[in-house]
Image: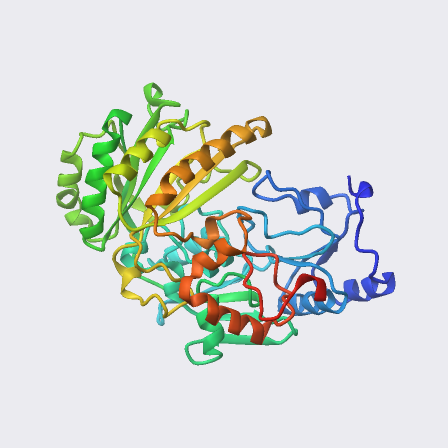
Length: 474
């Protein structure tokens, strides 16, 4: 309970009241009846108790909140969609800027762009853009927040075709540590625009994003599953196929347990299997021809691939991963799937401990590799896959089991990896792991961080520390 914890006591109550009166949104404190509901995180393994949560109504609220946190030396966290794995959208005894009420979206069908505010989820964006027969590439779950996914990279169903989400970012509006409101794009504040494309929430509060849209409405997509005794052969087939496949073809490989619900047939419920969730974004009249060699392999034990509205594919796994599950993630970039690596994948992928635990390989050959590794803060353009191992369950009693499985799997595969990690899919793994995520881009990120946030106000994240900064000096 909140009474058992120490809250921010250095802030004069009169200042708090003045701050509250300056807001159009709501200031939530530990004594409010809905405090526990509002502070709860997508990952229930993480439990944080902020002193203040501001449900911002507009950019002015964000500016006021940044200024209040800075003036009172409060720890500051930013929450957009709330899907952050290690719970970095909240903090203990500090202030949380909650953007979830800022959901404005505007589609410009002539310019083929969409502007989305920082509280939007990808389901919100898909709903708006699909009406115009267009899409911007995002992730694989529609309840994911636009902000976190974009600022870290953006791997998903359409990456090989359209690039990473951040490759489709045209500009951002943001509030800096000193309270200034700026736009960053290829024309304005170019250094900041470079940094936010992969550098996470280190540089300010992004209040809106402008994305390029692509004319994609219906895709030929869905899961295709094989028995575990075919797993090694399936991985080899997938490895050889996807790297050189036409860029209209996407598909991420998984080890999984089959959900015990429709539309999956009852004889497969809870069964451990491997599979690929395909997404072909080319002409539908060519889909059957394109999939002929894929369907000739195996054949699959389950084939749910067919025409789908793009938002339906994006929301396909929402029900399997509602808020409030226990999550533990490990991640790596993968250049090649050697025979030794495949053997380790099959060994650990065949030991999935719980229904929602899984391993995914997201392909980024194709469009993402046409961008240089130093053109954005996102560095791993030479990888072919982003890998995530997720130990997930609803029961806290299974926490140690899922963590142990994810760690063992990760430790077995890491020697076969490219060395770094996708910043959106690592837990609290230390500063060296953050540096490894950016490789030779890290030094430039430090320079830009030092310019825009020299006192590291925005540090509740996978932190890029400004030059000369030490926690005890703030």
